[in-house]
Length: 150
Image 1: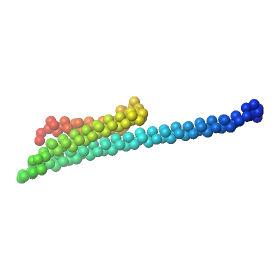
Image 2: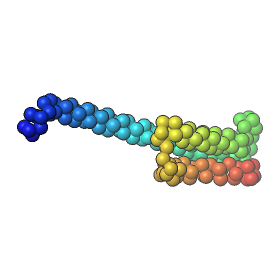
Image 3: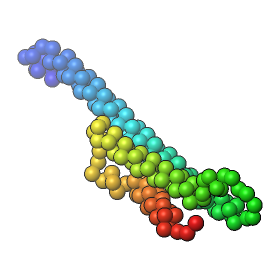
Image 4: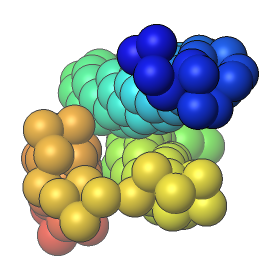
């Protein structure tokens, strides 16, 4: 080492300066990677929140449909049931949940692509698979209400 310093004075200072720059770059890359992971998790949480909202719309639609159906069967006047039929209320809630969840899934995919977080396996991730299940359930409920009797 002493020979190198004698032949090239200041070499050890250059090496330590290069090491410092390299360490700073590694630290910055690590922080960037962590921020990417936080953003990815935030997008997943947002999609899960919309899955919860879609499920709530599905539950409310089904519950209100059944309550209004029972109310319509009882004798007497029911002005709300005459204006809003059980079928129309259920359809509105089911379609709102379905469309909202579908748009949120598309928004998350676009956002991931825009910020370069898009992975080929995204469409098979657990969060997206859960979204597919809720979308399928909502589609079946919409179909059932359309094809069912009043």
